[in-house]
Length: 213
Image (cartoon, rainbow, N blue to C red; front, side, top):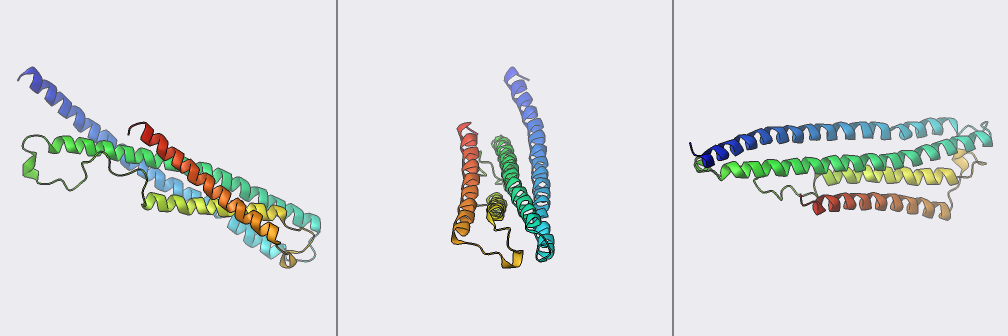
């Protein structure tokens, strides 16, 4: 066997090993993504439970204004913090998703290598992708839909937190009035948080593309 054949055989073995490692990393990353989203949704449901408890207790006229102020403040601060932490969490999850796509592209390149070897034509046309520019990092897919849903939830909590912090605690919950200014502030907070998360995602996508992956 010539030196060139030895080198080619060594490279083929390397590609096989790399294929096994990268494909396993791809599947593991997807498992981590699914787990992160499950835990995120579980934690995000906590304020909803808190609201239900508040609706039961704060409608009682016997509760003092100071107690309502404390309840509104705690709920407002909690949802504001949750939305900020949630934005950081889904940004981290988005980074993992981009890594999973990178792994998939590497697997595609290795698959392409083997389907270009002599004799590979007997296996027919490859069913799985062999292009290194697929799948795309952006686009409208399951990853975008999940990210948008979580980002919308974070923005809604951020808006709810802003509203809770501006409510008139001197009135009972059933008698509280929401002014136009409060509505605009809440809507502005919602749009601001949603826009911030969209910007973070765009920067993550740009960063990955700049690296030439």
